[in-house]
Length: 179
Image (cartoon, rainbow, N blue to C red; front, side, top):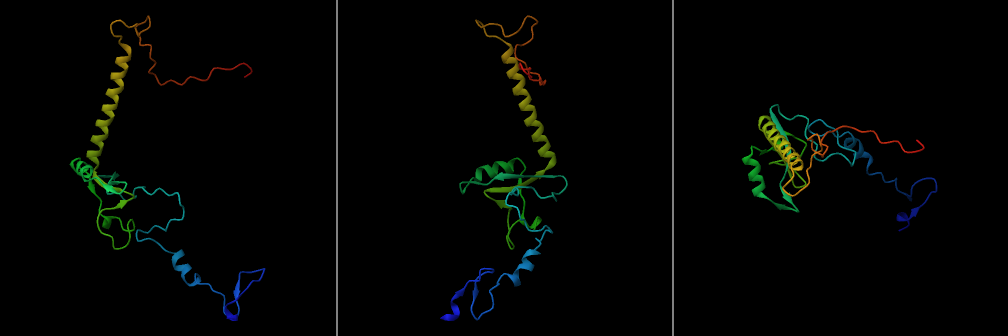
């Protein structure tokens, strides 16, 4: 029983009487410290790394995006089907070793998000369509703001220009007394 009692030395850590100090981590620390993931990257140290950063080795001609697989652990197969109808397909874990645990097979999934791919050409077309839709909406709103309905005051100044300023000019702040 006396052998298991702890002695406390004020200058060092507690020691067990009659036994060598316990240092279980020493034989294991070097292999762990030198661990390199199978994709050649070192293990991560920072807690604020972007969990959804895309791999640097995206194949040429493809685009990758994270798509919703589940919300509150409830899968939405209809959403995934709509993604597939738009050309998106799941990225298999075998294409990016080290992104999923060893022995994992199937799509790359993190926190309810699935990594999906489609041809870059389709992504470019979709982005152009979204940009055109947004420009049309802005143009329609400018027209609506410039036209008065019957019984309303005119929304134009004497020169016929809309009263709404739609320019993107920068105006410096006006000086305040004492500046």
